[in-house]
Image 1: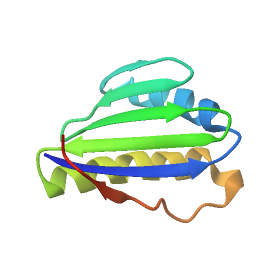
Image 2: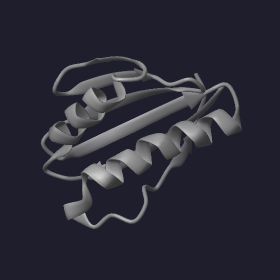
Image 3: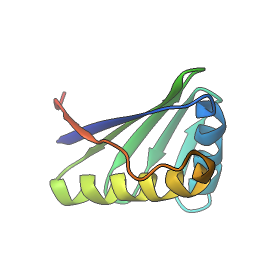
Image 4: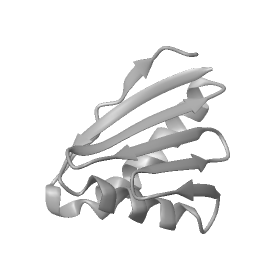
Length: 98
């Protein structure tokens, strides 16, 4: 199992979490609250957690390709939704597999 994490420091973390989850729910299985979202993508899974400081994203997949694809989906949508923050890319870091 491959895993990675990214964090966006922002006062709008909860807003972005809900926005992302509502958007993804049109095509994939998603459960969410204002502070946590679980998303099941075709090639991986993501857990989004938000608080007043920011939004953390943890992605897992069976292989590197699935991990990269899932990261790219989350990142492209977040960058679009958070356009006012002028982000260029998320800093994804490899995490230890459980």
